Image 1: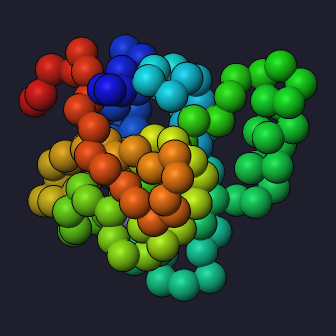
Image 2 (image 1 turned 90 degrees about the vertical axis):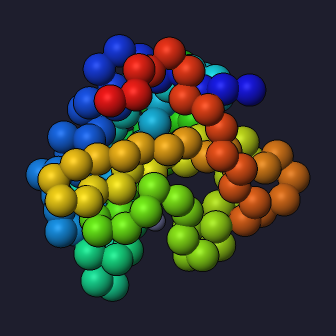
Length: 140
Ligand SMILES: [Zn+2]
């Protein structure tokens, strides 16, 4: 299964990644498992080095879960950037992948250019992230 992104979403995420560099940027992804229709940017509240780690604001996450329960958009995954890195999950990312079927979008920033790839968490196996194709997005 591939994952479709709403028009302009990739560009919006990559702009956030460029603005946050050399720190990691992060956002929650909303919509359906095969179609991400929106994103909600979060401050990176990591207590570690923000150039190497990210943490979604727990208050934001709570609010999004509550809104989803009340009929708002469903949380379908998480996005973050890897300034100076690769658009692939780190060991830490895999260790933190505990939500079944979540979409993990990762944007690498290298010399002012972005590359975004998409991964999906296993339904059954925490830590297992498998790359999936981004559908309908022309590669730049
Ligand atoms: Zn990462």
